[in-house]
Length: 373
Image 1 (cartoon, rainbow, N blue to C red):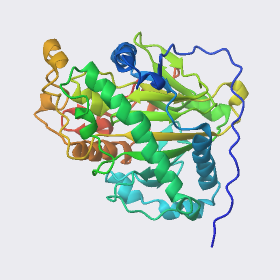
Image 2: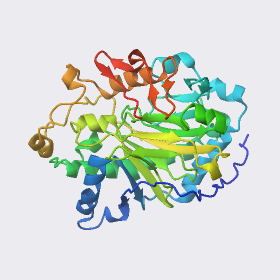
Image 3: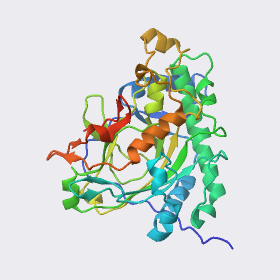
Image 4: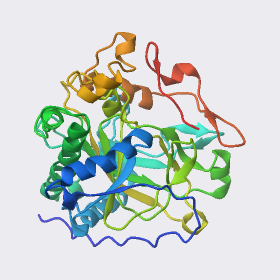
């Protein structure tokens, strides 16, 4: 029986608020195949990833129609009754580091009695290692979802990995690509993410934040343009700035695994989700994201054959300094387990700073997550 027609997705208007927008570079990937284009892109990338870890890309060979179809599918999933969505949720799996499938809103208390307002649905990459039952609205469109997932990898992630290899002066620009092969077992995933609008009273109790400052745990995260302003980044001066939704772009942030592989050269970007400005405060916020990670077997030690890292003396990282040589699979499991396990709510100061007990932030003995205020 054919699935029902998925109506076109309509984006809401952008904010008219006068916000402190972040000054981010935009990499034009149409330069990638041109003579000298990769080298020009690397020059632009160098400053962005060392100082902030955020940038835009444009001309990435994924049409706006393809992007909007994913937003439409996310909208259709979140419009399902809660009891239907909960068929794809497993609380015990979450607590043991399995993050694919559905996570309902309200799973955590942020502080002052206010629960989180975010729903997450993760679809693992189609590498045949993550078989999962999908809700009908997604299963009926699964080939299209797979095609989009693969395009995220091939058209964006692979190109960025080659640029990072050039930046690191690696002898082979495909070295990082081989550690991120789509059809080899890994934890990459596509995400539909839904933030429900919250009252001004509740927002005030949690510092006007939907989520406090953090870093992502993989290689890079792709955030497809959506118009409800909420994402903020911490710049090199330690100030929070809003990320502006730019037409025809993907916002990219660099993440913990890439920081580990580069001995800290590439900054794992610090970001948070703020309540939207007044003219968008009543709007729910739907996101489409793709999370890229090294293949599961990759050991997250600093890359030994990078002339640049060796010249700079960047030969250790937070793991190796503890005598740990974690694979991606091990890192994802311990970090996801820390993120998802039950914990006491944060103490939130009047100026919106979050403080957790140290035990709630422990990832491994001697290694703790950081909440960035």
